[in-house]
Image (tube, rainbow over all chains, first blue to last red; front, top):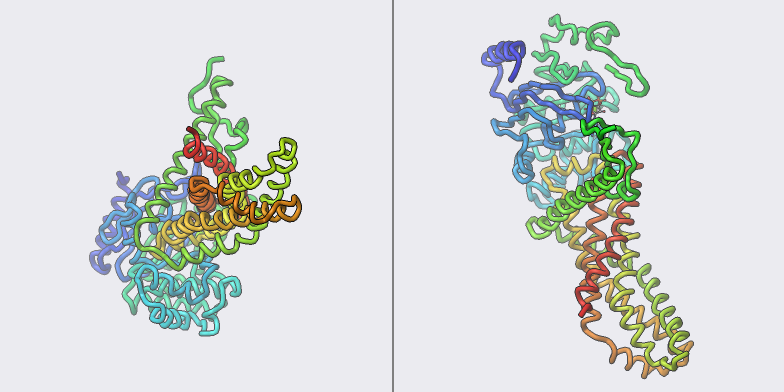
Length: 282
Length: 290
Ligand SMILES: Nc1ncnc2c1ncn2[C@@H]1O[C@H](COP(=O)(O)OP(=O)(O)OP(=O)(O)O)[C@@H](O)[C@H]1O
Ligand SMILES: [Mg+2]
């Protein structure tokens, strides 16, 4: 199934993991996803360890969001396996998937707030719908979480359309962490935020992982932020993980993809296609 | 040249049947085949595909209408949206229809001195056909379009994905309340439309055509039959299902930003209207063909 090359690397990783890494929370093997003729994920392997924070980096349009949506069961992979706590979720029915998703919190790239609900109702949604919490309890927790992302009580009754993009993003973050989920997914949590707020959000992610013991999978373009919040970093290129390792190793690795990506070089193995609007960015 | 079944697709030569755009929104690749059979086959396939998709969607929606959790507040909200806010437009349609019905049948029946049949004509046409069909068409334009636009926007802005990640099934939270509200509310709306329509006929008959008010009312009540009203209400419930299902189906499956939402809205109204007229005939057959 897997080529000798990958099985060797994963063996090497496993040896490393045995020493320092807790059990695997999410195990992805041979994940394929194509849209028509366009292959986005091409036999991707990745392990995400329990209670750790993994950041996925990679150029625009390499399929980072698609990877996240496959794990969440929002897109159906063409083939491959995704195990969460040892449970295979590819091909799982809707009701069973709903149970799995109770462990999840997700921040969408464009926040995806419910625009017919107020800010606090958005944050409290998971608490009230999936966890059956009463309105007043949910309100209290929603206000706590909103305060964590720097939004006060005066925003509670507003609608998403009345907020700026960065504020919406923070509400999305509050909604993702509201149910104190096991696994957190953040799609570019700090894009569109000012540096100070970006720092606050970074700290919040670190707190969620260390304080709640959650496992986090974050997509980021911001290398500084990525370094701050991650235990491990994986780089996605050409539908596969081109490099994965502990964050401090980022600077010492001789992997040409990483070298090119973090230094923003034009020359190297990564081909930046600057055709039309499909412009690759670091 | 022999037909080539090797599966070479030619997207440029697609000749879609005119309705396939709003039925399935997906180009079915052209395989070069015999020029006459090919469009026929593609038409059949597209038709079967849409029937299949719709059946799956409808059965999922129906099954979620009967399984907890229920959302009574959402159902109520949708009932107000479908019923209460449609009252003005349905009421206006009904009153003018009743009025024109009385006027037109008078010009016809006066020739045979059969004016006394007017109350009969008005009540039978309104309760059996015009009440449910016109109310259905008006609500399809008003509510079906709004539902498709709202759910379609939720789809393209990933709000439906967000619902899934918050462990909430959109069929339960979005679609079931709308379908339930449609099936429950349309019959009420049609009852109101029937009453207003008959009243419109009464107005014209009494004030313009010189009928005696008491006699006209008595005749109307004499001619009113339970089966007429009941068949109208059954139609209304069916139309309520069709309208909300089409709105939700096209919204739920819309893609590609504002344009996608736009065509979802159009498709929801067009398909609901056609289905309303089709099912109107079928239900009439069921009740009145002896
Ligand atoms: N629903 C879809 N239908 C067709 N193609 C899609 C769909 N979703 C994503 N793609 C394609 O998959 C590729 C990866 O998209 P994705 O959104 O995962 O990129 P990304 O890595 O998240 O980029 P960015 O950093 O800009 O968000 C893109 O080329 C896109 O065109
Ligand atoms: Mg993305």
